[in-house]
Length: 610
Image (cartoon, rainbow, N blue to C red; front, top):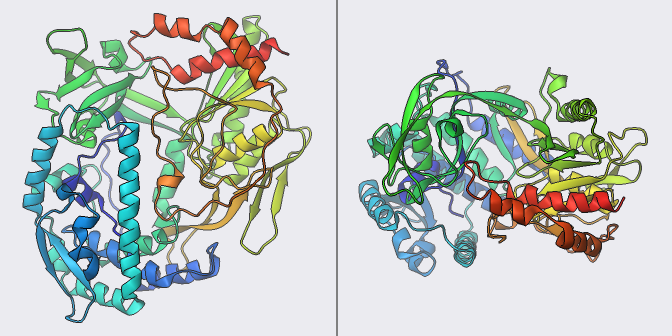
């Protein structure tokens, strides 16, 4: 299976993704020296054998992926291919993916080859392709499906070829020995431009060493099992949890998309932050930052240009639909605060409470930051705010969109806030019995009508809450089918024998109260509600699109529908105000939350039927 490092991806592809233009404070960071060697790699392999969900591990494939990722991890990345696959690559790869380079074997009798790309030529081709594709629209749904289908065929063929040559632990050790003997030759990147692009002067890094190789090999071994098992620095895990809980950054406060071959588009400026106050609007195209053109520049590099210390200025050259010439907007950067739990009374519908949860988080040593406590605190404040306005709360919207999950026990606790009895979730190891968690009477946060908002980025713990609420008929699910991740990872902290690293390993599946696992299939909303202006449902990346995901377990179980959906739809058709509201506000500086606004009609419909 071919894996591509960030370094190679940036050379070969015009990477584009969604991000927020912010940066961390400019305090210098001193890297903590850590170790990770062959003994740690072996400890990962041993821990997998003892703890992984599947005891029938394909070790040949695991060592293959470990070797592949070890080679690609080099600053001057190298590819490993089965010789038979390399000779017929044109069957599986597009012409622009067959980039130039040289091949060699570590030993003459090897049935696999090492491919060394000609990075200078690759970069030239990349720039030409980006110029040719500049300004082109995002691929259509059908085009995206074809891309993923083609990629699946390619990976399947490559995996089959690796299986044919029976790559072994001995071959892996040969590859590692080659890397160690040639480390000085391959630890310097070819392209200075790419090195500068990836470097962060505020986060100095140690020189590349065999530690990085063994760490990459460990993650290759784990990634051959499933996409959710990994080993990483313990500090990184703690930082991630703290940042999801509550954090602050410095920047302009705008969500951007595009980059590379596409224009850098302002998806949305964030309310009450510098971008929108300076006049930046949703739909604006940022042509340059402080005079530096963005054409062909990856989005992450554009964001680095925009970010900066609080109270400093950045000048954005803006192209706006309906305005003949581009114009400059000067934005004064500020501190951007990101919170895990946010809440409000819905504008123009203040009898509806709204709470958004971005992650199921526990912060070590800070219990007040735990997601369950923050939700209770938020709801209490909304009750008080409504009482101060002499408003009676009539419904609650819990927004789990773009919530990738977190701690399993928090998913249980938060579900228990709305349920009085019944199964919330079950977990099971292969061959083991199903362990079920039940709602406990007396833990309810509220008995108000409940609506859960979900989308394709609602995953794991979010899906546990959504499936439990749906199964017991406690609330209405609105939005899109969820991500489809129904596996439970155990955090082994620290990695045995190395206190600097932790191992996240898949140990069991979780099951909805119906008894079926939602792995791959996800949770379906009661009513589909589009997040797009035109009401469409574009292709979304889900668990099913990830290579090596654990398969679904087919089930004939059908969840009983406790809510009269047709009656709700009829009410919305006769009384809904979302369409007229969206027409009136389509040119607002901040893009309307189409999914939420459309969903409010259905919340009002539920209230009307109480």
